[in-house]
Image (cartoon, rainbow, N blue to C red; front, side, top):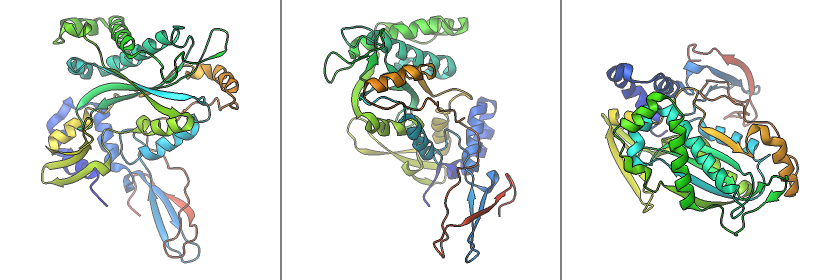
Length: 371
């Protein structure tokens, strides 16, 4: 087994926590604890027995923390199965909205407020242009996912939005973009996004408005072009398969870790411009600091649905799917709660000796001694 994030946290986490003290947020402490306990005896597990040769195997529970690199692949598959039932068959676009670099310190100090404003501003900007009959002329569906990292673990808050190239007008009829291969004008989106974000913050807390106006943020950013990127990502289920890893992606996967030598940690990443593989070596303290920047506030929802994709619009969305020639999709939302240790779904475990399916006999007690 290769190097895992849990290994680094177990080795260097206690000293890092002791040094940071009260500066470490409760959500960060909780994530570190979950990552170290994931699939260990601390969370208990199932005991499987082969009825033929009496071979015994143990399966420890996953922590299900949304920042744990071990848990997110299964979460992505479950999300894909649920959402593919109701999202319409159409060409899809991935639109990314990024906060200016000058606002990153402000964003980190005010995470819940700024991330919420980022979600709302991007959704309102897209919907405002989508209602314009020059482009589409109707209500669209928007699925937004918050990411806060660059590939080298630097802090870089942005939202990825999956948008189908179809909407519904005021009469309930399906409408499509006026130009083939084009959804919404990016420059206009950038300016609307900048204005909407300013209004969202202005409507927020008084202390937040004061910090934004009097803080170390250059006022010139309100005249600059904010970065908005749009690209086609395919149609129907193919687009969802492209997006599923985005939904549950964590800042760093275990397969990107290269080595840990003493207090030095090396990981690899792909350069976004050249596509070349690069390596980054940091002290364990710096590495943990970078990783923990991306632990979201407790209870903060990182995947949000707007417009046609909002939970209250499922009947209208089902009617749109019928117009497009698809059957009625499921109206059930994704209600799985993130961040809590749960018993994994029952799985089929095969005996390593006989090859037959093993029988699950009992459940090891949570936080008990290892079997």
